[in-house]
Every structure is written in structure tokens, then in C-alpha cells.
Image (cartoon, rainbow, N blue to C red; front, side, top):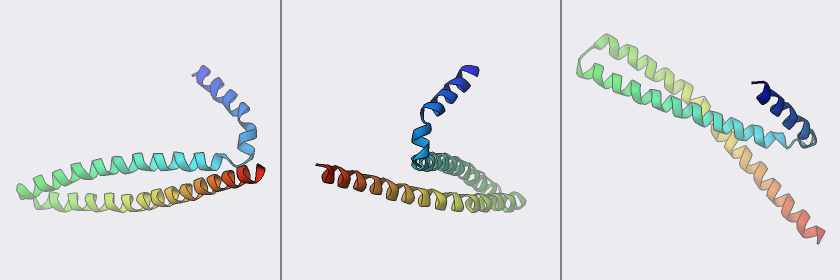
Length: 113
């Protein structure tokens, strides 16, 4: 644990110039996209199990369980919608930043020669 903390501190110390140029924003956005994708995968897995439980409750004609499972099912969709929207927004914003970086690099390289 101490070795990992010292490695992280050394990496931060070496990257301090890189952090000043706001180059950390795309990396943070990429980390956000990956985190949200993991969250969405977890929600989709949970929704699959809830759908299985709902089907089982319907087949066994357990009305009380059906309403409880439907409530849980709906709340998972309520959680999934904003996270999916945020993932879409971050992906689009990251794409714009990447295109801007590519365009600037191409123009600066062209004008430099």
C-alpha cells in the first residue's frame, strides 16, 4: 500500500506540467465514461435478474410479489436513464475535444512547415 501511494505521488509530481495545461479534462471524461459504462452493465445485469424474477412470479401467480418486482423494475429504469444520458453526453463531449485536438495538431503541423 505504501509503495502504491509513493508511486502515485511520484507520478503526480512528474505530471504536474501536464496537469497545468488542462490536459487532464479528457482523461477525466474518459474515466467517467468507463465508470458509467460499468454502472450501466451492472444495471443491465440486475434488470435481467429482475425480469427473470418477474416472469417466475407471473408463472406462479404471486400477485403481491409481481407488484413489488414491478416497482423494483421501474426504479432500475429510473436509475438507468440519467446514467445513460450522462454517458451519451460525456462521449459526445469527448469526441468534440478529440476532434478539436486533431484539427489543431494538423493545422499547427501544416503551418509550421
